[in-house]
Image (cartoon, rainbow, N blue to C red; front, top):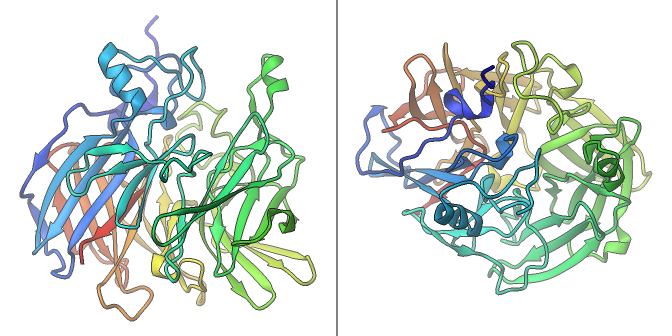
Length: 459
């Protein structure tokens, strides 16, 4: 009997082998002359056939970068050369297990999830370990980055850089032993100023968080890790539906003992859009699911539509935490399935009118068939569709240089045409979302579906 190929190793989820550098790419349409920088996206790309059951989160990190200058575009892609990657390359085979089936060798830092630009440094991120410094524009790996050896915890895949102060906030979580969360603040100069423990009753998978002008918001959600389940032969991770969600609000530089916890209905959140202060309230906007089976359900098991299990469907959602009364209000903002939310990061932690996200496609695998723009003031949503048989990724907001309006800029994402088996970098005007892309840059090779990206501005 032939084994079924893991769908995360097939079609456009399958890894590629070649690292390329191509100086001049074909552009359909016209590149905005103001663009001067590099779009870089991270994602999993295993260099060897994996051990055991492979989860999409397990693959070695690979960066795909498109440099845009003077109306022209170039491309390069590079593996992130972590310690585990180099050990496996030397051995000529996979040595480490993954989320669903750990090996005796344990886990490796794959650095495959996201990117952050801070203090003129590009960091590749994976929430189970240290970030890796990456050279721009070559995308070569420099080293594991430990903030002058002050780092004492893993680093979330989603640090937050305050656009006003230049500070960077991050956290790291531990599953098996307290403190289950450590919270850190990095100065605008790149110095790790402080790391403090955040007390939780049990280890949880905490993928993201949020900041406002004065506060940091942690999400203690009921996707828990318990050793006693593992000892019974059950999965260590489980979503505990009868456990409420807790949101901890802490003054950015405050004593962790002063954190205030607010309870809300049970849910899971992978990614936050933004948070901000409004009078006595802290407002948090994120993509919320009623529950999650991400570490339990088989990929592609939802009979042709990954949105079929209603509680697993992420929807844009708002919480309002009143610091005076302790009350919580929560509501769904839009009923379209969406994920990978982004904003104009010049407004991070501040009140916003606009948000963006990938539009979940009615397919067995998690793919986006377009990009959504949410007008939170007018309660209107616009969609840019990629077209038949075309699926893309996270839309990274790139502000127009010198812009005075929040939505003045572009969204960039890689799009794969599954009929032609070709890939493009697509650039969409955020002020004309429903129109065709203003530019489509033809890629010299297939770009597998991946995770998060960023724009590194040269000017």
